[in-house]
Structures are given as structure tokens and as C-alpha cells.
Length: 420
Ligand code: SAJ
Image (tube, rainbow, N blue to C red; front, side, top):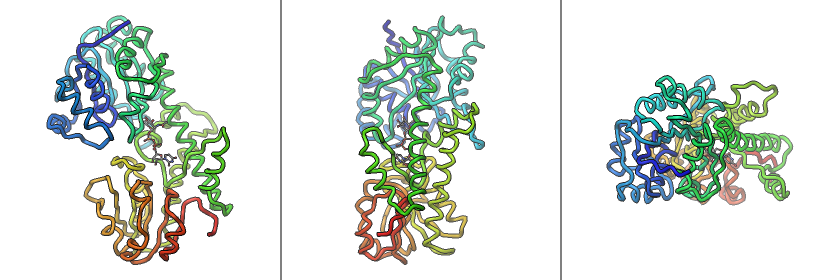
């Protein structure tokens, strides 16, 4: 079957919605971007993007200039909707589907008969059925007859979103065969990877399983780091050598997994109880590493001294600081009466310094929390010359140990139990 909607409305213009709206516009669809944040729409209408992502500006400008991509402060009527709203967890670590519920309630009020509703947001298995579809049913719509549903989870990684939107395989879960085929008609206009069709609940679990797999792998590497410190070996060397086995691929430990996906989505599976749970323990391991990182810093500084946290983005070379390990560790240090200065080359908010030498000046310790490319080229001589004490704790295993030692730094690397 072929379905070419006259208009596609993308609801929620964040890290996923905006690139998706842009690529759809660039692929010949007429797209209307909508977001509850009116200020965001005002900025987009002026051509200002809310975040940096390689290749996005060009794609966005192409779509806007062709007239295919427009923005609206009110939710429009459209033949297809793609919902990309946040689905976080609550304070007590339960799925928070309120934005999804609000967005789809609004869509149910606006959409004409025959519309296709696609959910891209990551959700728990069963959420489309429990949270989304009831809004339409109560308005008299009959799923599979005059309204169609699909879950097409986004799988793109920040830093490579545009490339992965095109190249990655996609999984589409349809309410029925027709819904799945309708969604496939849209995605096949820009996806060069393979598109796999299944049912909605399976697609929901596929997405959460992917992020959980990565989270558990990283949590295991964190446990290896803690063990290496106890055994007196270097975890970085262990992982590098173990990964030479053809069937082993251990990811890297660090001060904590941040962002809006890995430390969040696995909780969506914990709404069903299994004991013992690898997923639960892995999420705990992530929390332990934040604490462990603060403890490592405290081996170097005492009350009243100053630590400079290098990196508040949640990972390398992005400007996103949601669930930032850097901020979380800094908060723990402040609670222990240690003063904290934050630096990041990409995150531009008031509490974060842009100038590196200014950020480390007078400091008693550098706490390296993110493997940003510029941090791989730090000059220990220059940095040491402005610090109060020459000390560094590297939580990403990226510094050249010998070089920092030669510049008279006291050095500690996470997971490096081996004496040099
Ligand atoms: N991290 C490590 N060690 C590693 C890799 C990552 O500590 O070896 C940390 C990062 O520093 C970061 C966190 O994990 O704090 C998450 O970063 P990430 O790059 O692993 O993943 P995200 O959250 O940016 O994107 C993930 C991706 N999921 C998978 O690769 C399975 C992406 O494809 C998803 O689309 C995205 O979640 C999402 O939106 O769900």
C-alpha cells in the first residue's frame, strides 16, 4: 500500500522531533512542527535551533527554504502525526507518561478520521494501548477502521542523529497490518536501512531492550573498574585486551551514565517484577559510580578546597547536560563543603565556565568527567601553572598518565588499581 499524507505534524520539537521534522521536510513531505513551548516555536520561526547537532542546521534550512517545513503555535489538523515528546521517570522511578498522554489527548481532539498516529517516544511495553489509544476510542474512533496507530521508536544517537536517521534500520510496530504499512510508507522516503514490521508492544519492548542492553554492559564495565581498583590492575588495559576476543565487546566505565535514555528507559521494564534483576542492579551500579567518583575526589581535597569539574555534558562532544554525571558529582562535593567550579567547552549556561584556564585557576583538583575531544589535548604544564595544587582525577581514562606525572601532578584514573 502507499500512503502519502498531505500534511505530517511532528509533535514535540526536541532532540528527536526537530531532526525528524527536518528530514521529512527535506524528503518532500509537507511538515508542520508543533511544540507546547511557544517560545521554541518563535525561535524556530526565526531560524534559531535550540541545540547543536552535526548536519542539522543545513537539513533544517533546506526544509524550511523549500517551503516544506513550517511551524505552528497551535496544534494543526493533519493526516499523520509523529509524537516525539519526552517520557521521563518520576521521582520514585516510575514511567512518567504525562506528556505523551497530554499530547495524544490534544491530537485526538484535532485529527480527522483516517489519520495515522505514530509514537516515536520511548515507552513501556503496553503504553500505546493503555495511554494513547483510549483518548481516541472515547471520541468514537475505531482503531484499524478510521484511525491508525504505530510505534516507531527512534534509535538515533546524539552526535550522529542526522546520519543515523537515514542509515539505521527501523522497527515499526503497527496496531494492524494497515497501520504498519502506512507508517512504512512515510519512513521509507528517507530511511536507507531496513524497515522491520511487527506489533506495537513488541516494538515498544525492542526499543527499551536496546537501551537496557547498553546500560547493563556499561554497568558491568563499571563493576570491572571497581574490581580492578581492588585487584590492583588497570581496567582500561583489561577491557582493551578482553575486547580482542571475537565475541567480547565490553563498553567503557565512567563516572555515571547520563542523558535521557540509558539511565531512564530501563526503569520502564521494572514495572514488572523479576527477582533478582540484572537491570535493577545495573541501575544501582550507575548510582554507585557517582558516589565512588565523589569519594575518589575526596581522597585529594579537604573541606574548603576547590575542585574544577571538567565536563558537565552527559557525554562527549554534545551540549546536552540532562542527567549530567558532572553536576551530580559536583553536588555531592558541595554537600561535603568542597567548592566546585564547572567547565565545559560546549554547554553554555551561567554556572559553567567557558575559559579553561580561568576555570582551573586556584583550584586544588581537576575532576575529569567527560571525554570531550578538547579534553584529550589538555596541556598539563600550562594548567598546572595556574592551579593551587597539581592534582587530577580522570574518570574517563583519557589522559596520558606519564605526561601528567612528568608535569608533577598527583594523578588518579578510575579503575586503574595498578601502580605506575
Ligand atoms: N557511556 C559510558 N561508557 C560507554 C558509552 C557510554 O559511560 O562506553 C555513557 C555516556 O558517557 C553517557 C551515557 O553512557 O553518559 C549514554 O550515552 P550513549 O552514547 O551510550 O547513549 P545515548 O543516551 O546518547 O543514546 C542512546 C542510544 N542507544 C543505544 O545505543 C542502544 C541511542 O541509539 C538511542 O536512540 C538513545 O539512547 C535514545 O534516545 O534512546
